[in-house]
Amino acid sequence: MIPLHNATIEAMIPILAISLTFAIPVIVLYYNYQHKKNVMNERRLMIEKGSLLRLCRK
Image 1 (cartoon, one colour):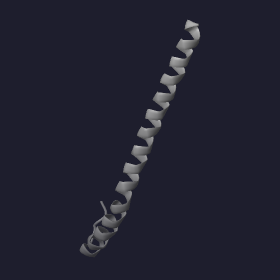
Image 2: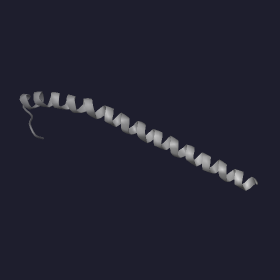
Image 3: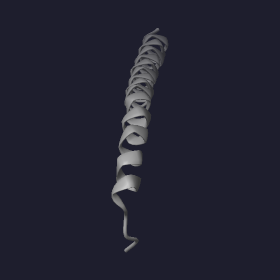
Image 4: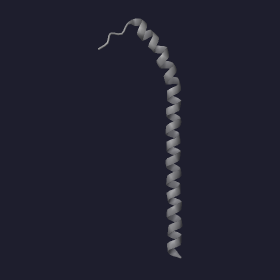
């Protein structure tokens, strides 16, 4: 394992804090987008299935 000096760890803390501050909202936005995409796809499939059932009944 690479030995880390105190100065290295002290320099990494602000870098990690800043990067995680921006990374977490990006991850949340990505998962929210994926969830909405899945909901819209499911809704589209239900509409297609409903329209196919209506065509079969006539």
